[in-house]
Image (cartoon, rainbow, N blue to C red; front, side, top):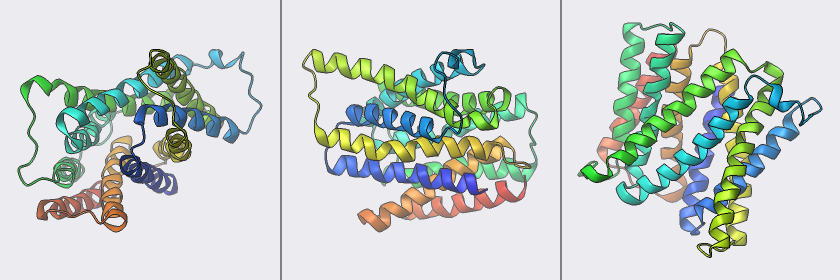
Length: 289
């Protein structure tokens, strides 16, 4: 459970950093690319064994890390587009409700438990995500022509979590978690550098020091959010459906509370109801596993 708590704290810190990005007008793409580079370096330095670059391609999880790196970049861009077209609340709901995909995967593929109270807890978690994320009285409104973007964020985020579970269960040795994580971020960094390089060469963007600094700050907690999530998925006696549910809902609670404390954010009554339901869902999922 320590690994899960650390993953929750690291992920919540990411949301705080993104809030500062908004305040200081940080270019998200530039910061994200640098973040992936720093996250990759963090994984390499955390790896306890000597690294032979010529043999990395021989690992069974190598191709999977390439696909995950691609999805990291794609989902990031989809989240940016969704934010522009539909707002932050839509992104938060779409990305957090994506826990349904790895939960269903765990039940179908790994035959994880489907007890009444556990399913009730997961269902309540879904409701809590919506109530906590939506910060306007009128709720969420999405035009039909823009509906595809939150759907793709939902699917893409779910695929990332499901792929992490599948690869770590079947192919990643305990000692290789750092290298596995570093390789994912390495591929994401390479793709991001190509995209950013194209934008710089075509004059669509200009590199700025504040964006690079923002990426450096983001990189370390981003690496550990993935590293500790993988460690948490290996916790004996707790199924992946429970891990993903507790992780996503707890991140939502902690990041919301940090928003109140650090940025004086105001919550609507339904947001507080969402937080209470989120706590209830964690209790049900954690105790009924």
